[in-house]
Amino acid sequence: MDLCEFEASLVYRMSSRTVRAPWKEERRRMSGLTFRSTKAHWTANLSRPCSHGPTGLFVPPSPPLDPEKIKELQRFITLSKKLLVMTGAGISTESGIPDYRSEKVGLYARTDRRPIQHIEFIRSAPVRQRYWARNFVGWPQFSSHQPNPAHWALSNWEKLGKLHWLVTQNVDALHSKAGNQRLTELHGCMHRVLCLSCGEQTPRRVLQERFQVLNPSWSAEAQGVAPDGDVFLTEEQVRSFQVPSCDRCGGPLKPDVVFFGDTVNPDKVDFVHRRVKEADSLLVVGSSLQVYSGYRFILTAREKKLPIAILNIGPTRSDDLACLKLDSRCGELLPLINPQ
Ligand SMILES: [Zn+2]
Image 1 (cartoon, rainbow, N blue to C red):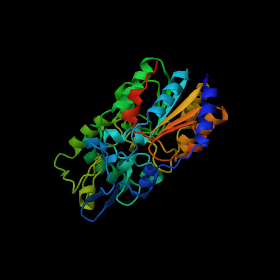
Image 2 (image 1 turned 90 degrees about the vertical axis):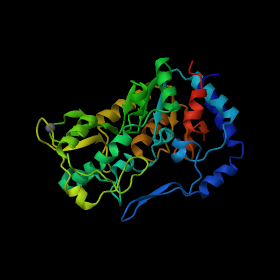
Image 3 (image 1 turned 135 degrees about the vertical axis):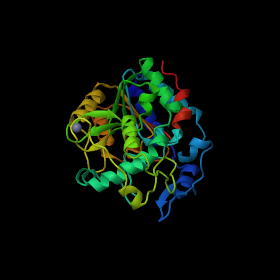
């Protein structure tokens, strides 16, 4: 059986059986983990039942692993000779990073009311000052997140020649920490800083040292810290925070990530389209595909009639295009798959 026949058999089986499942109804009723900023501090509403373990706080509930589905995914992977994998925030929740689909760079990029907008960051020095002050305080925790078994599995797939290319919508550097090199970070990476004037890229950790030198007596005492490291600071704290500029040209600095209202570099988009066209199958891991910058590659894959499998807890924008859909924890399922 080749991939096309496999896909056809799965589509038939999916359409011929009832897909209602009690846990899906349960999940729909759950409102999810939400954060809100009060005048004094961040508060977390942990009303949603959480998965076990300290890093499970941000993983939505999921049904037990289905042995049949595992076998189906195994066959999909075995039959794939040029597999393209696209990952989203859902793969990093098991590393302790909250899943905020609509905010490409997570809580880091948020003000206390709404996500930061690219144009505001570019135009306003006070906005940049507030952003960097919060980012400075949250950085030690954010940068300490480590790859989980799902990242390690994909790294292993690359080493064994199973992975044609990996595209991630995440900015947390967990794939590169796990050792993946055949990797495109679609929305950039928080671990790099970009000069808006001359384009020089520098490591984020170097900027942290410059912040410390410039703000030796600045009190980084946050009123409260959200689990991903984002913080609430008073206006007074923000106003006294000194933000360095580019060492080379004096221009303003920005994380090398795509903020709201910005677009992904067209060359990068073309590059990924080419990788998709070379692939013979596509696996989506931990993404609801709501953001167009990732969804467009699904459309390309579909045009090419590539079989698509999706591993994501909860519905996605492309469930109807997939030959295989799995609602499981990425870190539990992917290590079970033999890539050879
Ligand atoms: Zn510069």
